[in-house]
Length: 415
Image (cartoon, rainbow, N blue to C red):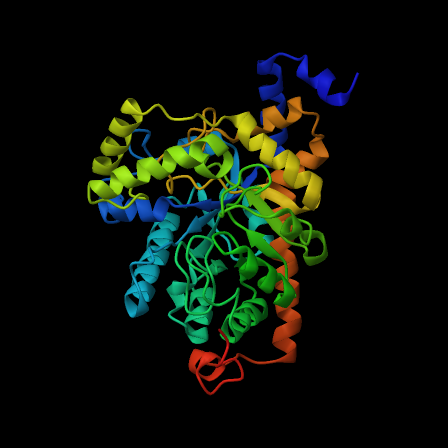
């Protein structure tokens, strides 16, 4: 009998107990959680009003008790701001998001540990606290400024997603009309400077051409903080197989997301209709405020939603492991950044259900420890080593987008 078959005969409760035991030593590093933006939208960062030390099941996917139940050992908190904010407004809002995470770290210091390095992550694990890192979701947050990029790094940001849903002036998004052909000359310089300072290049949200261009330039591991497999669900937010296959040479990690429209083919068309319904009510499709969720749920009642499950996400991880290898996959749920979640992965308490499902499929304890903890920690550690070498070799780049992408630049006549 195969390992998967043998494991599959065991009671579900026994598999879940085994998952919890494994996660006690190798907790989850989650690549992306939008709690800071939810706090901004719902309470304008009033942590008395929206206290994650109390049960927030009615309002959020995330609170401390559910993080503990989910065996989360490290969290990249997204300091996302929407593409509607541009220029200095985007920078200011990003700083407010960073400040919100810092407020959380002070208020909940017994549970959340500030982390800037892989060593900090390991120390937090030993202390029984949740290592807390920051990730900026969208290159619009730096307003075309490498100095601003360095300032965000100094404030603790350890990855930046090159785009969000719209292009930047120097990088193409997966969900916008292509303009740069991947990365412009300045875009390549952004990647090089991120390598130099030790900020992980996050390729979630970017076009496949941008993924390939960034991989061609980056000398440090890249990550996908919350993306799944294009071959399993044909959505532009997912990762093509040829890109997954490049991760072993790069050392990067693709962190599978749980968002139904990115993991379940049947949910793609349904979500497009749900998004149009939100726009018809004058709301952004990504809005998860109480008023928006009431409209989401009313649409859902009238239009039954195709249901993603734990098995749906496991299908992506099976495929990603096959193509990229076990050392190059991880988890990035996107909690509090999506209106809908899979059954069994309803909130941050659900990770043990996913591990139990993978145990059923014959994943070994060693493989699961890589998925949940080791791969993400190793990627950050390797990026830190690259940064040390590059800082010793060269100083900060003061290149400007005007100089590299302007009409008089070598790339000035590009289409």
